[in-house]
Amino acid sequence: MSDETPICSAKGCRTTAVWVLAWNNPKIHTPERRKTWLACEEHREHLAQFLGVRGMLKDVVPLEEWQAAEDTRG
Image 1: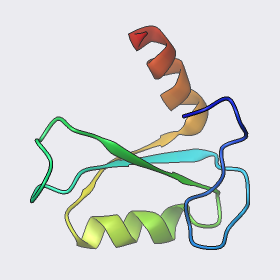
Image 2: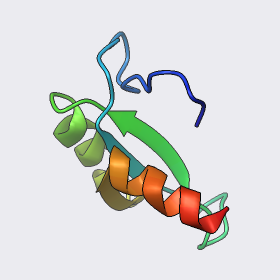
Image 3: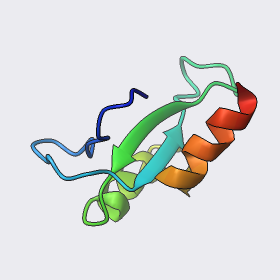
Image 4: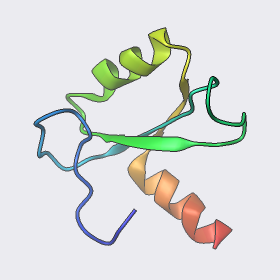
């Protein structure tokens, strides 16, 4: 993630993101690999359901919490 304002990953949305949806595609990623989508409050549930029905959603975390964890990992 960059220092720019994080924007929701939902198609066409330009709202500031407040959630991180961590996911991986078990068909192509190793189990520990995490890809991320960002979500605003409005699109969090929709994006989570999209990933969830495909068995790819691993975690939904507030953006601030995700960034704090990244800072401690270095």
